Length: 200
Image (cartoon, rainbow, N blue to C red; front, side, top):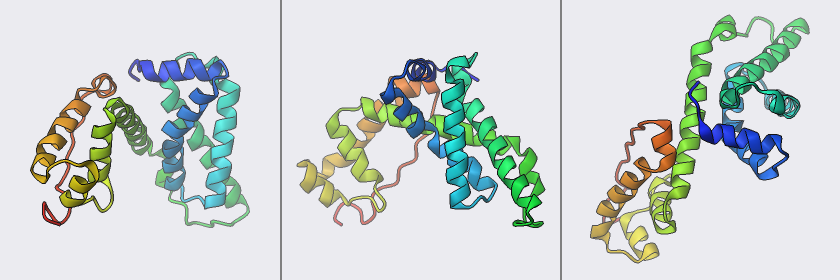
């Protein structure tokens, strides 16, 4: 696990009872916990129970982590164990029968991918927060589902339609060179034009 200073800082602050740091940790890694739970095909109720167990265990162990930068791996391993506990309990009571895929029990590669996704998304959010408000608004409108048309963006932001593409390119370049993404490593972006083109 790389020496991620942002993770180390968050862990240190959260261990010191910084509520904002706790909130940031949960926002950053809740998708990782959820993604691992879904691989075990848990019910929504069981996913909530596993999540609560994982966060309670983190409260107990956070100050004892020997390598704070390894927190994502700790969360993944703990979530996997909690999921296995739920699955085994369900098997004992024959609620799941033989529907559980045994390959899930050793699928470490998939969990590693989920850790990488969580870290990448956190880096993207942090890099996005470094952008000026105008750039954030432009990219947010382009990333909506469906994305806003150029005419909507022009009317909302008060910029000519012809300058939206170049401004988008400059914003993405600035995002790529943000300190958060530079620390994470090179991330490739692929952004298609908003639906409907310039005149929509």
